[in-house]
Length: 591
Picture 1: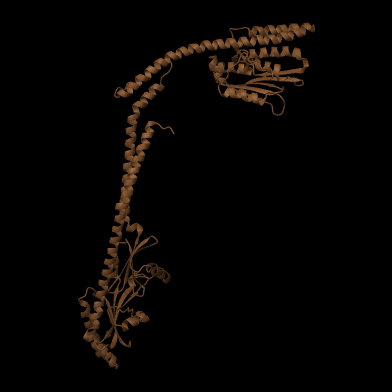
Picture 2 (picture 1 turned 90 degrees about the horizontal axis):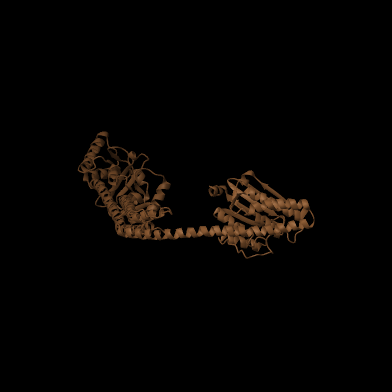
């Protein structure tokens, strides 16, 4: 495709700019954004490990409380006494025992950072219970699990999470068994805490969700109670990977297993949150690159426009050149090359003007000579045909017909030999055609029927003299050869929708399709010329006085502004010749 110079420059520079920015974007994405994503993953993994360490610290401190209590000799003494002496104590003795136990429990938790915990002490057979602070124990629920019983028998810590729908009511318990040095078990202690401390540890400012599972794959955190189905789905999803980093759906999961408590900490980041800073930087970078690209393209467009502006000004000056003013009006002297080009154009135009004036003078002389020659051709041919018809009538002694024919011939000769009138009204041409057909009817008698329908608007049109008559004459001379009478000719002319239309129809033998194609090809190929020495008597309209002759004169007169169509009738024998032109073209020619 042939593009303008500025368009080519813009396309080339735009491709270069886009390629450079695209290459830079790929480089930044591979070597910067991916590293930032890896750093985000590493930071999140460190956060997961830190949360796991804090959870371990919390569990360890809570376990320290249980260890202090199970190692307290006072508490062990009372539990041993309760186990060996099953007798009941009076109210005073029970009060003294509970005070001493409360003092031991208070001393155990006073020096810790969790002074607001609930403590429950149970004897081995369960007939004794001590409550420190609120009475909301989880021991029975935890003890109902065989796995927890086995842990207590093995002197291990049991961590039990009691989750409620209301998070404020949820609690987490740390349970151990009392054993002496001989391995005898005397009871159990439960240290219960709210989720306040765990919430503080697992609070990541809503950036991620923290999930903690115990060794039995039960959800310890979050504290809110969830349905069994959701809890099972959560466990199955999180346990696909035991530890490390893995992706599930649109979440990035980080997992760490505590060495001390065995709790497994999962931190679940939504992808858009995990990479929020990277995505923000990426969007900002892309926006910056797009702005840079747009600004660069705009500046490039302005630069190329400034570059080609002198050429465009010179082009506009050349386009403004007319025949009356063949001078390049360009006054920019900043560019010497453009001024040299302007001088070269001006020299070409000066030479062209001289050549054009000579060509116009030659064409005028040639056109005048051609019109005179064409008209001189038509007149002898027409007179020969009419005189032949008059001689036949005189030989048959039809005096009135001879007089009428002479009158009609006189009118026609007056019309045809008027060399000063190359342009006539269509009404005058129609009157000549009427006289011609009347003369021919004298010869053919009833075998010839003709009809002429012309509107008043059409009669006022200007046309070349004797430009329509040859079509009618060819129909009389050639169309009816070998055809049975009657012979019908219809001539119509009208003006409608700012166009004039003339039609000549006959019921003769018609044109050979090859001849029609030949005439149409010569019309379309702009090779409409007349061989004045040619005379084909077999087919109408191919000689020097036929259709091409008339079409040449009409084209010269209307400056190739006519539409011509020749076709054989479909449903009946004969041919129709159709001419059409724009009425405005006629008015311009008249003016």
